[in-house]
Image 1 (tube, rainbow, N blue to C red):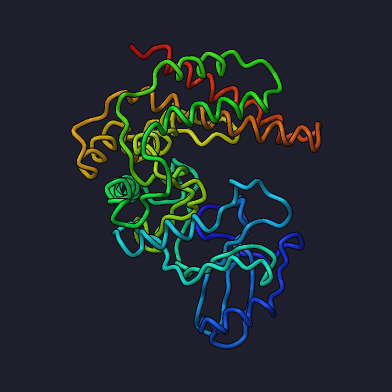
Image 2 (cartoon, rainbow, N blue to C red):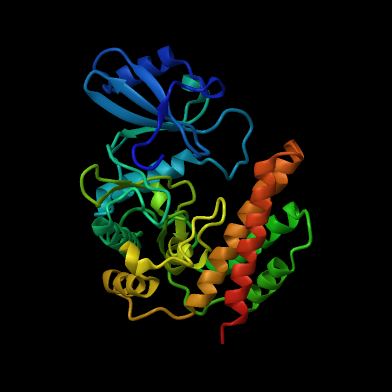
Length: 351
């Protein structure tokens, strides 16, 4: 359902020692009476909980239980980038309270931040929002991204948060290797796209704080107005190329509408729906981020589609290993191919 985030009793697989957690929060002066713990439902890879104590409300995010890849689920990086942005920028993020890296408290690292009330919209056509508010939300989304990319990451204490040079080239190599490792069937469009991207790395090597997953579904919107009140899910954040972040944000314009599981706008009458077109958003972004223009836009779009297809192919391969009859896995596999086709279509028409 679009709108309010869904909050449920804590799932069995994600139970934690609530007594030990309450003691720890009490030691840090965060409680105002008994602690109540519930869980946010949704696709987060890091389990996310609502903590309530008296009039106080917080959100706790932790690593998932069990063994995880060393480079994945780094809640310490999420905490660090949001804390830095909260102290050194106008990018809307929740206030951070603490980071706990002692596994003895609840079994994994976790952090606690303010709960920010708001709505979540995952579908780019924004049918759950009045037509006259849709352009305002799209504009505020792009203004927020421009603000993020304008932050002086050195001054914000994030100079070592990622490598500022060679981001796109490294990412193409990384996701090409990931795709090859999870390949299940021949996908000529993906092979062509990989080779083309390796030969078309953009000369522009700008660097900024990149969110890595900047889309409507990771934004909290004010309960009354179409304003972004918090950017969430910073798990993929790094120092990266701002235009790669922007291209990912604009992918719905290049994805077909009406395909199951694909959040696309292509094929819709945007004007009739009150949604700005891509060109007007790019112009607005350049004004907000202080850019003269955007070179190699098709390359960044092709890269964003390639990365998305590689991620979906990994999901597909893992699902097949767990259950070959998983109907959703087969849908995911089809989406990976469709997205790769879109990327290759953009690449081969680029002069």
